[in-house]
Length: 196
Ligand SMILES: [Zn+2]
Image (cartoon, rainbow, N blue to C red; front, side, top):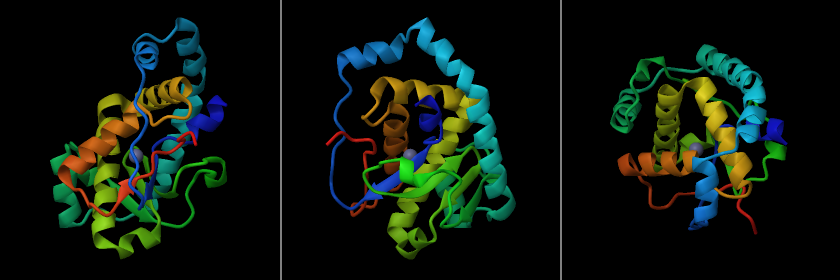
Protein backbone atom coordinates (compact mmCIF):
# COMPACT_ATOMS: atom_id res chain seq x y z
CA UNK A 1 0.00 0.00 0.00
CA UNK A 2 2.77 2.41 0.81
CA UNK A 3 4.59 1.48 -2.36
CA UNK A 4 1.50 2.20 -4.40
CA UNK A 5 1.19 5.56 -2.68
CA UNK A 6 4.80 6.35 -3.52
CA UNK A 7 4.11 6.02 -7.19
CA UNK A 8 1.44 8.72 -6.95
CA UNK A 9 3.87 11.46 -6.19
CA UNK A 10 2.66 14.69 -7.70
CA UNK A 11 0.46 13.07 -10.34
CA UNK A 12 -1.98 15.80 -11.21
CA UNK A 13 -5.33 15.48 -12.86
CA UNK A 14 -7.94 17.89 -14.09
CA UNK A 15 -11.65 17.83 -14.60
CA UNK A 16 -14.02 20.26 -16.21
CA UNK A 17 -16.62 19.77 -13.50
CA UNK A 18 -16.57 22.13 -10.53
CA UNK A 19 -15.91 20.19 -7.34
CA UNK A 20 -14.65 21.09 -3.92
CA UNK A 21 -12.42 18.78 -1.92
CA UNK A 22 -13.82 17.54 1.42
CA UNK A 23 -12.32 19.41 4.36
CA UNK A 24 -9.60 17.93 6.54
CA UNK A 25 -11.13 17.19 9.95
CA UNK A 26 -9.52 18.41 13.21
CA UNK A 27 -8.70 14.77 14.07
CA UNK A 28 -6.92 14.27 10.74
CA UNK A 29 -5.08 17.55 11.17
CA UNK A 30 -3.90 16.44 14.63
CA UNK A 31 -2.51 13.22 13.10
CA UNK A 32 -0.78 15.20 10.34
CA UNK A 33 0.76 17.55 12.89
CA UNK A 34 1.81 14.78 15.27
CA UNK A 35 2.23 11.47 13.44
CA UNK A 36 3.20 8.51 15.58
CA UNK A 37 6.89 7.53 15.70
CA UNK A 38 5.86 4.07 14.40
CA UNK A 39 4.24 5.57 11.29
CA UNK A 40 7.19 7.88 10.71
CA UNK A 41 9.69 5.04 10.90
CA UNK A 42 7.54 2.82 8.62
CA UNK A 43 7.41 5.57 6.01
CA UNK A 44 11.11 6.36 6.36
CA UNK A 45 11.91 2.82 5.23
CA UNK A 46 10.34 3.55 1.83
CA UNK A 47 11.80 7.02 1.35
CA UNK A 48 15.11 5.93 -0.26
CA UNK A 49 13.32 3.71 -2.78
CA UNK A 50 10.70 6.34 -3.54
CA UNK A 51 13.33 9.05 -3.94
CA UNK A 52 15.36 6.89 -6.30
CA UNK A 53 12.22 6.38 -8.38
CA UNK A 54 11.63 10.12 -8.54
CA UNK A 55 15.22 10.78 -9.63
CA UNK A 56 15.06 8.04 -12.26
CA UNK A 57 11.89 9.52 -13.73
CA UNK A 58 13.29 13.04 -13.47
CA UNK A 59 16.33 12.00 -15.52
CA UNK A 60 14.07 10.94 -18.42
CA UNK A 61 12.33 14.32 -18.51
CA UNK A 62 15.62 16.21 -18.14
CA UNK A 63 17.09 14.31 -21.06
CA UNK A 64 14.10 14.38 -23.40
CA UNK A 65 12.30 17.55 -22.37
CA UNK A 66 12.67 21.13 -23.49
CA UNK A 67 13.53 24.21 -21.43
CA UNK A 68 10.87 26.78 -20.56
CA UNK A 69 9.53 29.31 -23.03
CA UNK A 70 9.71 32.98 -22.03
CA UNK A 71 6.04 32.88 -21.04
CA UNK A 72 6.52 29.76 -18.91
CA UNK A 73 9.65 31.23 -17.33
CA UNK A 74 7.68 34.23 -16.09
CA UNK A 75 4.96 31.98 -14.61
CA UNK A 76 7.59 29.78 -12.90
CA UNK A 77 9.23 32.85 -11.38
CA UNK A 78 5.89 34.26 -10.21
CA UNK A 79 5.02 30.97 -8.46
CA UNK A 80 8.41 31.15 -6.74
CA UNK A 81 10.69 28.63 -8.48
CA UNK A 82 14.30 29.47 -7.55
CA UNK A 83 15.92 27.69 -10.51
CA UNK A 84 13.49 27.70 -13.44
CA UNK A 85 16.44 27.22 -15.80
CA UNK A 86 16.78 23.65 -14.46
CA UNK A 87 13.23 22.68 -15.45
CA UNK A 88 12.54 20.56 -18.53
CA UNK A 89 9.06 19.85 -19.88
CA UNK A 90 8.64 16.53 -21.64
CA UNK A 91 5.46 16.04 -23.68
CA UNK A 92 4.60 12.35 -23.79
CA UNK A 93 1.54 10.14 -23.58
CA UNK A 94 3.55 7.59 -21.58
CA UNK A 95 4.19 8.57 -17.99
CA UNK A 96 6.67 6.69 -15.77
CA UNK A 97 3.88 5.51 -13.44
CA UNK A 98 1.08 2.96 -13.63
CA UNK A 99 -1.88 5.20 -14.33
CA UNK A 100 -4.39 2.35 -14.16
CA UNK A 101 -3.71 1.98 -10.45
CA UNK A 102 -4.31 5.58 -9.57
CA UNK A 103 -8.14 5.74 -9.44
CA UNK A 104 -8.14 9.48 -9.77
CA UNK A 105 -11.18 11.65 -10.42
CA UNK A 106 -10.02 12.67 -13.88
CA UNK A 107 -7.34 12.18 -16.51
CA UNK A 108 -3.78 12.35 -15.29
CA UNK A 109 -2.41 15.17 -17.37
CA UNK A 110 0.86 16.10 -15.72
CA UNK A 111 3.47 14.71 -13.37
CA UNK A 112 6.28 16.59 -11.64
CA UNK A 113 9.43 14.79 -10.61
CA UNK A 114 11.69 17.44 -9.09
CA UNK A 115 12.81 19.52 -12.11
CA UNK A 116 11.37 17.08 -14.65
CA UNK A 117 7.76 17.74 -15.70
CA UNK A 118 5.79 15.23 -17.79
CA UNK A 119 2.77 16.57 -19.69
CA UNK A 120 0.31 14.75 -21.95
CA UNK A 121 0.59 16.16 -25.49
CA UNK A 122 -3.14 16.94 -25.82
CA UNK A 123 -2.93 19.32 -22.86
CA UNK A 124 -1.04 21.89 -24.93
CA UNK A 125 -3.95 22.13 -27.41
CA UNK A 126 -5.94 24.37 -25.06
CA UNK A 127 -3.73 27.31 -24.23
CA UNK A 128 -5.45 28.53 -21.05
CA UNK A 129 -5.79 25.03 -19.57
CA UNK A 130 -2.17 24.29 -20.42
CA UNK A 131 -0.92 27.46 -18.73
CA UNK A 132 -2.96 26.72 -15.61
CA UNK A 133 -1.70 23.15 -15.46
CA UNK A 134 1.95 24.02 -16.06
CA UNK A 135 1.75 26.78 -13.42
CA UNK A 136 0.41 24.20 -10.96
CA UNK A 137 3.34 21.90 -11.82
CA UNK A 138 5.74 24.79 -11.18
CA UNK A 139 4.21 24.99 -7.68
CA UNK A 140 5.25 21.36 -7.18
CA UNK A 141 8.78 22.30 -8.29
CA UNK A 142 8.76 24.97 -5.56
CA UNK A 143 7.76 22.26 -3.06
CA UNK A 144 10.62 20.04 -4.27
CA UNK A 145 13.06 22.95 -3.93
CA UNK A 146 11.81 23.60 -0.40
CA UNK A 147 11.64 20.00 0.89
CA UNK A 148 14.09 18.11 -1.33
CA UNK A 149 13.25 14.84 -3.08
CA UNK A 150 13.45 12.86 0.17
CA UNK A 151 11.39 15.43 2.07
CA UNK A 152 8.70 15.43 -0.61
CA UNK A 153 8.56 11.63 -0.63
CA UNK A 154 8.20 11.59 3.15
CA UNK A 155 5.51 14.28 3.23
CA UNK A 156 3.57 12.81 0.35
CA UNK A 157 3.44 9.35 1.87
CA UNK A 158 2.65 10.56 5.34
CA UNK A 159 -0.23 12.70 4.09
CA UNK A 160 -1.51 10.00 1.74
CA UNK A 161 -1.39 7.38 4.47
CA UNK A 162 -3.27 9.51 7.00
CA UNK A 163 -5.83 10.98 4.63
CA UNK A 164 -6.26 7.98 2.31
CA UNK A 165 -9.17 9.09 0.11
CA UNK A 166 -8.85 12.84 0.58
CA UNK A 167 -6.94 15.52 -1.23
CA UNK A 168 -3.66 15.87 0.63
CA UNK A 169 -2.27 19.20 1.95
CA UNK A 170 0.65 19.15 -0.53
CA UNK A 171 -1.81 19.06 -3.40
CA UNK A 172 -4.10 21.67 -1.83
CA UNK A 173 -1.13 23.98 -1.40
CA UNK A 174 0.04 23.51 -5.00
CA UNK A 175 -3.48 24.21 -6.30
CA UNK A 176 -3.67 27.43 -4.27
CA UNK A 177 -0.16 28.56 -5.27
CA UNK A 178 -0.80 27.88 -8.94
CA UNK A 179 -4.25 29.44 -9.08
CA UNK A 180 -2.96 32.58 -7.38
CA UNK A 181 -0.71 33.10 -10.40
CA UNK A 182 -2.72 31.68 -13.29
CA UNK A 183 -6.33 30.52 -13.08
CA UNK A 184 -8.34 29.28 -16.03
CA UNK A 185 -11.95 29.44 -14.77
CA UNK A 186 -12.94 26.64 -17.16
CA UNK A 187 -10.55 24.13 -15.59
CA UNK A 188 -10.74 22.68 -12.09
CA UNK A 189 -8.57 20.18 -10.39
CA UNK A 190 -9.95 16.71 -9.99
CA UNK A 191 -9.62 16.14 -6.30
CA UNK A 192 -8.15 12.76 -6.71
CA UNK A 193 -8.69 9.81 -4.46
CA UNK A 194 -12.01 11.44 -3.63
CA UNK A 195 -14.42 9.12 -1.86
CA UNK A 196 -17.70 8.66 -3.74
ZN1 LIG B 1 -0.59 18.57 -8.34
